[in-house]
Length: 208
Image (cartoon, rainbow, N blue to C red; front, side, top):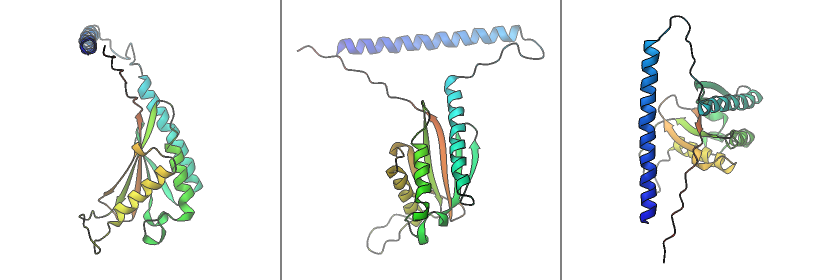
């Protein structure tokens, strides 16, 4: 255990030293650029980070796939870019998706929902697609008992999330909620985020 703690402290120290040296290098580079600045066109261009480029490309792929889905269902949904390279919004009428004012999905729209699940379940390597389901309505206080009112917008959003997850969308990337706004409107926000794999450290074996 002592050896493990020493190694951990050593790695933390190395990381701090590297951070300081990086900051010093950036400060020196900034000083040189300000001293020898040239007029007109810049003499160098900032390099595009690989992670950022991957996110932009993944967003383009998501927009293309969702756009193809929307085109097959003309008049059902509308797709627009909220934040280029990061967030897309798919909006549609609540009545177009839920049957008879209840919380169940219309069987005719089940394939539409399943195709959305298939899209968010298969992002490019290195990124993930987060899905936020938002239904406009009034958030009712929680009640219990036989006469308790049902918060239908929240129930519909939760049911849609369950259907997406049941159709293959990763449960950790799907969230549902209620927002203020024009009732009867459903929004699905798709966010492109880098996939961060957890770092696993094996604990050293202790001598008997």
